[in-house]
Length: 426
Image 1 (spheres, rainbow, N blue to C red):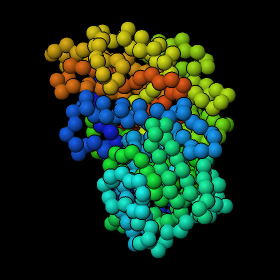
Image 2 (cartoon, helix red, strand yellow):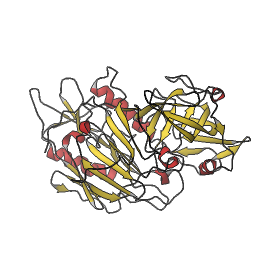
Image 3 (cartoon, rainbow, N blue to C red):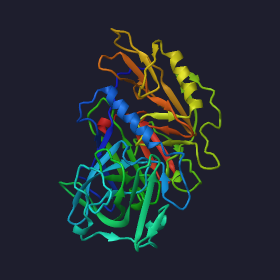
Image 4 (cartoon, rainbow, N blue to C red):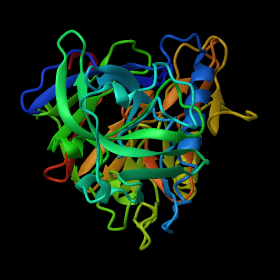
């Protein structure tokens, strides 16, 4: 049982001065994307969940026909962004960072269909290190859909109708400003035809297990992050390579589950979730509830770009019913609420007892305290909301539940490890 009084914000990622040593290891700092705006907690939650809904609008609209590829990620809705530079001389860009996406791309100045962005569009004609990739290059071959005119062109279509099309190329990426580090020959997309606006960004930096992602291109064997509390303005670390280690005192591990189907589902980080306990009650969840289906749908993924946790409706209704039975508060009927389940807190109440929730994985039990599952969403402190919801077909472990958890993606060994941590001091 735990008290909960967290405030909700959306996370933003900013690259600070770093030091690479043959890509052996580096640290990147994370901070909240909405921390500079005067949003109320309710507005922050609403914004976050709207991002989530758009993000997963495409999960079941994947088309493998010989047309544009629909990929399960909405490229304006991920929770983190990063600031760095590309080209020689360097040109600053701001892109969204996401473990659920693989293509790296940014809007280019020569775009014929463009959207507004916070920095000037990247201009490849002003860079001496820009180089188009041929259609027989390894990265071009890794695209789910490409064409030649005459060099490699990519084309992505997202489930809500957003698109990005352009040229696949390589460029020098520069991280940090005070002590800049240049990394040559990173494959990325130069977006020429891009529809729909993004959230204060110009493109995507993918960290998924797909071959086009940054971690795949750099052959980083592991990475980790530790997200500070949503009520805390401190930065959070993202660690690449040798710096991505856990203390070893209380960490647990589980194997990743591989989706054997074709892109894009195969690039997600799937986890072997087997059951859920609310309070002290293990729920009667079907053994097949989190299994991958023969066509590659279903399963349970961990995703830095999704805010709250989504469970298939069958499972969510069991969790919801148990949460209601264990919280002695009146359930609110909220019209157009960002989340599904909220409670009324009586005036004068100074604390609320909420149940812990344990996710049972193959080889590990992850205990989530109350502050990782509930949020006060109004200025008067009278509305308590449950930060989970339902979604058809697939379950997603969101970043709200990942607060103050150091999570290590060991890509080389196919294992995800975690441990509770004070992310402020990591």
